[in-house]
Length: 473
Image (cartoon, rainbow, N blue to C red):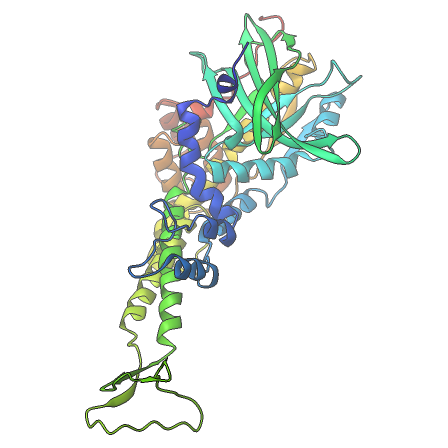
């Protein structure tokens, strides 16, 4: 019997991935989430300034913080650009058409579900889709897709072919407990392939005062004719395909964090500098009736003293420090704009040189992300066919939008060619992009381009991995 520690254990890759994505997730949740992480401790998003008390720091976090969220804008713009045109899907198979119309089993469409999935992958560095089927409990049911949040995944194991043979994740939810109360529940699922059989183990734990004492193992389910777990992965960065995958938006998020820190400091300085204070010297503090002899100030108040060297004056803080911070904030905002534009063709605040340097690459990158999504969605369809015991040769057409801000010029051609030469896109993807921009360099024919591409090694993201048929198993 599995222990509580074994059931809740996470792989080192899962823990590392969780640490990598925390800043992005907090930026996604907005200013309030950033304030909660600004505790003044060593890992705080805001440090305590010298001579600042904890009370003063907490007041500054509450009243003098403002989030310029360039990261979420860049991610949202990128994802929205891919879905400016709806995903095209067509099939003559009535069963498959019905399944796709109810993609998530709850009436959600393919397009709506895929857009949310792609956005989650962008923030988390990875997204996972479980293709599920309740045929043992529901008559005439169809397979459907469930998104698994990257934070909820405990472990993934793969064989030497790259197929997932173990997938462990958790689900937390609330359910009724009698007529007058609810209870918090955690389920831990383990999907595992053994001898071409899919086994699903489920463990259930109930929170009592926020703690789970132990887990109960529910009935194990067994499904035959599977040689891999029906999980589909989506990674923005194809170079790292694991639970600790990097996210291409991490650099932008780090600059956003620096901006958050200095913007808070600037707001504090402006608040201080806008309030001149009174400086007095040469006065002797005397006691009158046991109280301090304080200098009173206010309307129609005058104070006199016989001391010749006594003086009172207004002191106005200079603006040198705040001016320096303004320059730093302006520079950070420009850098965030440039970084963001490398993911999306947004040139509203860029110089002509920056536009020229980033536009073509951002177009090709956006199209690459769209192609990654298309391949992953096709894999989901293949698993749906598998569950329905249909042939993988069942014909269907699924096309995502690849003409994202595509400029039909030599610059886009060079950017695509450069990405292909670096192994970022496959031969197949490069050909599709060349076709989409409708541009051929003057010194090469289309046949010569194809010959040049085919002479280079095709990388792994250019291949659709078909499921094995029932007969091949």
